[in-house]
Length: 128
Image 1 (spheres, helix red, strand yellow):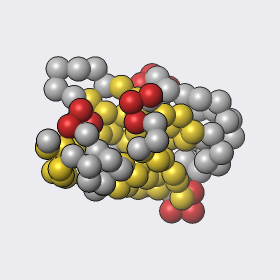
Image 2: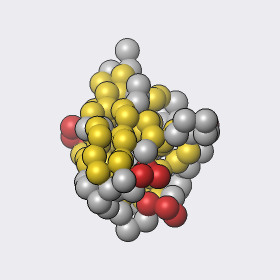
Image 3: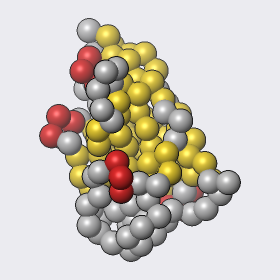
């Protein structure tokens, strides 16, 4: 059974940092894109950052550029999201996602529909 397990969320103040981790089990995603999405109350799930199989290509939504960094450790089958200078508008449930398509591709995959496996989500709350 394939599972994505997220950790690292919490309640922080504006300007603080958090690092989210997502460990995959049940299969390896070392040749596939992975990403982080978030969903705030009453809003649709949106992409935050994505990373290609070898980490050479990354994508960030405009609102997090310069503050968030996505990176991965393929031997550990894990993807991370380093979040600095957090703002109240970053408050959301953050989801890790993994795709089974596009092996060894450096194209961008930013749609929810591009991803086949999802974690359970981890809450990030930023107070002002």
